[in-house]
Length: 265
Picture 1: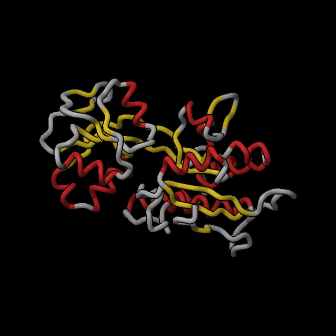
Picture 2: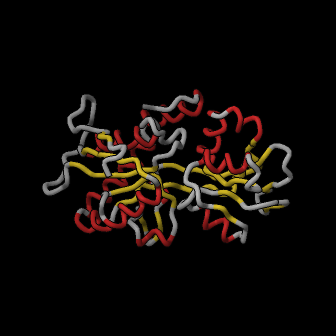
């Protein structure tokens, strides 16, 4: 768990408007996140809007958050086993309810308390005929590459498409596409676009195609154990996510990151 461990907030930081934690509340929460670049949300150099959100959330609640960067499937397993208190950023899948807890309202997952909304796009070799028109994938020649453990895999299965989901890194999947071992790739738009922007060979041969395959909210999940022990604090954490997401500081950083291409430290 020590790999990539970072502390993102110390209570009492200058400028923080912290709530006073309840007696018995934990002073430090252990979180995990994926260890792959997902611009502008989280990068391996520990910059990104997710880290800013967690830091502001810590200031808002008067808590310290420590974040371990792990392979995504390992992160979810650690959440399920209680090795961490929370994990981000996770889309909603019913089968993940056994892994941890989402913010809920009226028996449904509460998108108003999501961290962000993210999409998946189809990536193809330039000149390829494979295409997605918003309803149907046509002229696919080969499997669709996707990241192991990501929610898009279940969606691709629902479309009854051939899938290759053994790799965890976008670069690995785009490399397979480049070598024509795949017919297309289905990647989170932020990750796919960032990989193309950082690799001139990919950018020369691969393009993003069509409208989004899917677009969905992403959440901070909390462990079952944490919610059982601290139910009121769990609700305040999820409420705090929504408050930070709509705050002037976060919205300004979001607009700056999207406009400039520069991650937020």
